[in-house]
Image 1 (cartoon, rainbow, N blue to C red):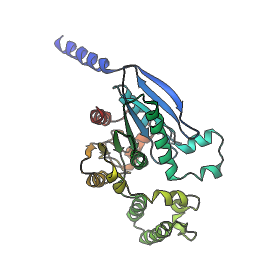
Image 2: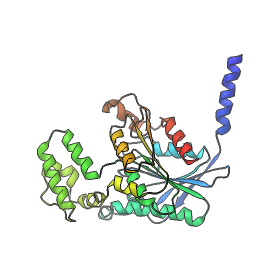
Image 3: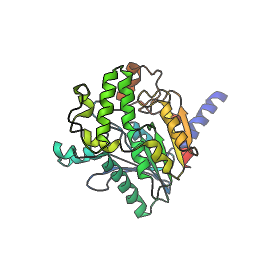
Image 4: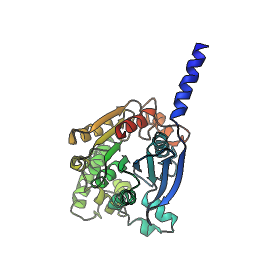
Length: 309
């Protein structure tokens, strides 16, 4: 009987923290559409969640990859008194409005930064929230760093890289043991850094240096995450998971070194899509990339809530 009362007490404590949340779809401008989650209890704090690489939607999903990672993160924060706004990446919004392939190919990395800044300005100008935080996941972490330079109260990097994208690509090619391709990639990056495309790139690297993609990478490669993070003067939280097979914890160490006053949190067994997994083995690890019912690692939201509050 005593144990039963204890269990009932625990359940009551958990449910008492849960709050009704109001969901509202918002159109910020022609390129940004997302969902605002507002706790019924009064809050003066908003977290803007920026998705990672690829054609991600506001929930953190894309074709052949549905895990609801950003949706769950937003819900976890809003259930604990922090309003959240998460949005679709620009290409998805453009497609929804009838853009053609040629128009989509003109999207650049800087456009992502512009979109994030527009979102922040939208909420700041309405003066509904006294404090606005930016949370960036993966590629979105670099976007967030660049967008958090004005009127932002704190920045949170989740699975953000410390190295620039060219170095990451070179490392990945090197892991394949293809030294000739590494040298070819170095040549192409050197040309791209002069502002030109490399029309004579190694055909073995066509999936990386397609001529349609090079202008985007050329823009992206111009930014160093460690240099950009070091410019921030706001409170910063850096989070990475030990079972992230896309962005290892060494990347978080680089970010921490660049901004020594940042808080660093390494979460055991969390992978790139914010789930708890038992292994770094790709076959085991990536199963969670398509498990939309699987909730995020609880510690993730706990650390973010503690940092914000």
